[in-house]
Each structure stands twice: as C-alpha cells, then as structure tokens.
Length: 392
Ligand SMILES: Cc1cc2nc3c(=O)[nH]c(=O)nc-3n(C[C@H](O)[C@H](O)[C@H](O)COP(=O)(O)OP(=O)(O)OC[C@H]3O[C@@H](n4cnc5c(N)ncnc54)[C@H](O)[C@@H]3O)c2cc1C
Image (cartoon, rainbow, N blue to C red):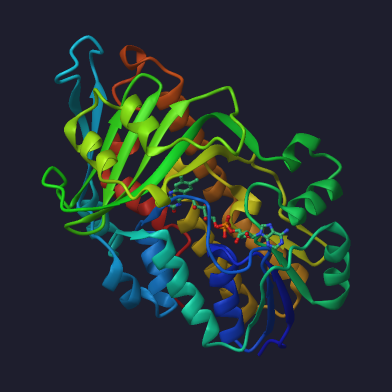
C-alpha cells in the first residue's frame, strides 16, 4: 500500500490530463495548472490513435467514448509524385500500410479522432475525479520552485515549445548542451484543418498520404463526411505569426494535386485552418531532477511524421500511474519511469526525424524504396508499439 501524494501537474494537454485522471482515481491529491483559459490544443486538427493508445484508453475506461466519435482506418496508402511535368496524373501509389493487420497483431484497434473530441473526453473524465484544474495559470520558473517545495511530485506536461519544467531539468544536467532546452525547428511547416462535407473520393477506411517534392498532403477520414488533413512543405523562412496561411493560399499551392486533395481544400472549414512551424526536441538522457518529472512532449516531443506523439503521451501517463501504485519512494518511481520509457520514445523521435528528412529534404527520385514505415512487417510494428504495455 503506497501513501497518497500531493501532485502538481503543469499543462492540461493529453499527457497532463491523462495522468491527472489516473492519479486522482488512485486517491492522490492532484492540482493541474493550465496556461490557457480552457482545454484545447494548437497541435493538429486530429490525431490517429494507434493500438498502443487504444490499450491505454481501454485501461482508463475511456475507449468506448473514443469509439463513438472516431473513424477506424483500415489502411494508409502513400502516393508518390513521379513526375511534375504531367499535371493530370502526377501521383502513383507507392506503398500501403495494412492497418487492420497491425491491429490484429496488436489486439487493439486504430482510431482517428478530432483533437477537440479527444480533449473533451479526457476533460469529462477529469471532471469526474477530485482533481482540481486551474485555468489561465501559466507556471514559470519562479513558481516552479514553489511547487517543488509544496508538492511531493511536480509533473512537467507543458508541451514542446517553451516548457518551463524542461528548462529546469536540463539546467540541472551539467552534461547536456544548452540547445537541449529549446524546441528545434525542423525546416517545414504544417497547415492543418478539418473538412465536413460528403466527399465521394474519400474512402472512410483509407488514410491518403501524398508525397511530392518537398511537399506533403495527408487526409485522415473520420466518417462519411468528416476528415482532418495536414498540408506540409519545406520552409526556412518564418512568416510572422499574424500571417498564417489561408484556404486560398492552400488551394493555389495544391491546385495541380490529385482531386481528393483539391476537394478537401475547397470544402475546408476556414476557421479550422491553422499554421504550425514544426518543432521537436532533442532526446535527452534524463527527465527528472529532485521531485520534478517531464512527461509527454516536454520530455520527448517527436515530429508529427512519427504519428506517435499523443500515443506516447498516453503511455507515459499510464506507465507513471502504474509505478505510483507499486512504489512509495518518489525517486524510485522517477528512475523506473525513465528506464521503462526512454528507449521507446527516443526511437520514435528518431523515426519522426528520419521520415521528415525523407519527405521534405530528399528528392522523390532519390528516395529509397520506401522512407515510410510501410515496408516494415506489421508484426514488427505491432510488437514495437505494444512494447512495455501489459495490464497487471
Ligand atoms: C500537426 C500535428 C499532427 C499530429 N498528429 C498526431 C497523431 O496523429 N498521432 C499522435 O499520436 N500524435 C500526433 N501529434 C503529436 C501530439 O499532438 C503531441 O505529441 C501531444 O499533443 C503531446 O501531448 P502533451 O500533453 O505532451 O503536450 P500538449 O498537447 O502540447 O499539451 C501541453 C499543455 O501544456 C500547456 N502549457 C504549456 N506551457 C505551460 C505553462 N508554462 N504553464 C501551464 N500550462 C502550460 C499548454 O497550453 C497545453 O495545454 C501531432 C502533432 C502535430 C504538430
């Protein structure tokens, strides 16, 4: 039997809310501090929850709620641009990831969900616990020091961009380079959005992924008339944040791309469109200092090309909660957490960078047979994604 702890969580994103739910259900005294006035996220219009995420959501008792509002992709088809001189049919199918086979091997399904729906489900579950959430409450370095003194455990779940908790940890690790404090811009942008309109060229079981020359367009269906999508292209020049890309910009840029892409853009919900300069963080060798622990993107943000950031945030929350059930000493929990999680998340960070390099910084004619994961056997993918996840 372990003692009940006072736990402060910085950030009500996927990692922070999932851990808050699990810790509060165990009877710990949980306070969540979120800089925004309500839950939400700028990171992507939707999320693909692979079988490892479904495992965690099932353990949390939330999978039924997820299923009600999600799509169930069965395959992901990648199209490559083989000629920019033939504007009528410049893309061909290059490879196919058979998602239902990965699901079968992993024994959990894959779901596609709008991010706002995922956040709402987590927030509803959080509100049913004794955890207290403090909105419009950003935590900066000075207050972090206070939290460290007042709480048994402080969780830095404050995301990839300006994590105060990550700065605290990396400053304490004298061997780390100062660059590891910072999110790193990876030379490409994502413009994301949602389309809600019956689209005949979108099969609701198929994720479509178009790779051009330094450009990409991915379409993820949720149901017969809803999909989310992400356009990407290389950009070294940062436009000012008051100049986000518009629907018209995208229609113009992708006008010669296949019809599913142009259709999705024509019918997009203008208000859902958001421009993201895509950053990740370098892998670091430790995520804890004293009683502060990083989880989720603050610890190991991977590029969206890994497809695993939110899934890993959920895994972190579940793993940490399992350790708190079994071990009373916080230093033991933090060391075991690092040991259990670091190899998997580091591999995912590296995969994200490798795929981004292949898409955005390699000419189509110079790409290897396949730079995506579709050539990896489904049982290898399933085994890797499910590694470390066993219900006890
Ligand atoms: C375009 C795009 C597409 C993606 N698609 C997928 C996908 O398909 N599948 C997948 O698994 N992952 C995907 N990801 C990655 C995924 O979105 C992230 O990895 C995930 O959101 C990480 O969760 P988090 O809780 O660690 O961080 P976040 O979701 O960023 O949450 C951090 C929270 O902390 C708050 N915060 C920040 N600073 C402070 C502070 N000082 N004080 C208090 N609060 C603070 C923020 O407001 C935010 O609410 C994608 C990412 C992008 C950019």
